Image (tube, helix red, strand yellow):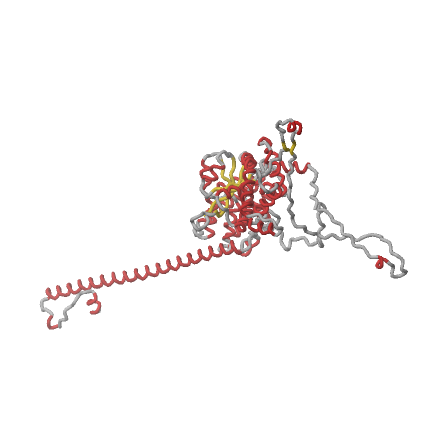
Length: 564
């Protein structure tokens, strides 16, 4: 070992010459042994230091690699999340997927059509693409026959009627008719309720009480209020059906020199909501008799005086089955589980909803069976398409197979639909479950794909329930569509003034949603409703249910237009 190494190890050796070595062999041997022992100590210490240095270097390299991997994973997660939010807020709103994209990843599958049916099912309307649009119909569509026609005749003057050849008057031999669509702005009318009064002249002449009486005035939507049924229906439909804030209605009315403050219209809507409360209660009773209920919720900002900002309340939608075809909205000041728990306290059957934990207490009673939504599960895999295209494509193709079975079963009765699902959907579900179990072991749990797989596995039992009954739906799109009118309106009227206004909004949304579900004109339905509800006995409230109203309306002759 070099002398510098000895000094570094803390061992000093005295330098002696050959002449200084002892002549005694035993003593010389002892010196050699001592020197060798010291050298061994130095070698061992040096080896330990070298090994420690190597370990430290390896540990530093490992830590650097771990830090780099963590940073890369965090950067990837941020990129995925950012891309997800950007696509959700600024990207296309549909979720079309072509299973043939699997060929990009070397996966061979049979040719399948574009995933248009599931998109149409979720959006509630037929998907029309530029390629598939029918182009053989050209020209203007004919105007509807129910619109009144006003004839405007155009004739030649006497000079133009003369024949340019012989000068004789030409005779009318026909006519050319072209139609033009015109709009006449809505107009106000003042309804004067004239109540004729009668008294006894004879009794008055004899000095007695003349017994004066007047014809009774029919009950009005708002007692001693200004609006008639039509105006009240117009205000409600404009705000909640056409998403027109009341301050805009205030400006629209002012163009006709009618000054109605928005605060006044708020009071009108509150009165209309209270008038409709018995009818909404009847719809609730009917929905709770359903075999299955769809439900969803959405936030609604509510003013909170003194806090400087709005708090988040909730509007919930509850949709009955085909035997109880109503949509009821319910308002709660927050998203606590007490809201749906109270509303569904007496319900027994199947509840189709999202994975909100507030429903767990309802399922634990044993009276309600959870049915999950395949549209929710599918959407999470669609969101992972940008970061894990191969797995997303494989999963979306299998989900498309489930929806293909639903397309085939759409016109079948419940029993036949159940048999078809057991025969075709259940094998697909088995393949999906095996795929999820296998991929969960490979994919990072906190990635977008990992979260999608985790969601599907956590909801797996509820995702399979729909295949056990023919009357259940594969997804909760019906409730999501019911929430769209609230989401669109929220972008326009922005917030509710207080909790009572939120309750009024829920009551009136129920009426508009019921009319639209049954193909009724909401304004016309509400006009008739507000005109007849005030004096209708509670025992006859069923006649105002939208499905009953539609049948009665179909049996009546069409109404004549009001005179100009």
